[in-house]
Length: 128
Image (cartoon, rainbow, N blue to C red; front, side, top):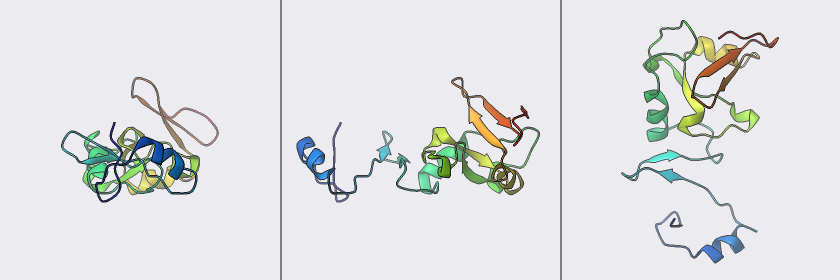
């Protein structure tokens, strides 16, 4: 693994440990084509290639029975940002504005180890 500054200069791992005591360190993961796909918790919104990656997971809104195309949807956190959910494609999915609003009203979306999403109502009853 290589650590670099925002200008591309290599950083010695021991300097990172010392800098971690007083500086902001941002974790950014890039793919093999140097495209940013994960910005951890330093960025709240899915933007650029990270947003593209989230929207490619599904062709429509992830809410059961909703057929709105992902082009009409928000790139939304499965585990919400306020619940410490990271901004990475594994924690995202397209939600149309209507269902994004429901999520903010107490509905919860989780993802199991197999990648299946589960949605529960505010009272804890499963939707799917």
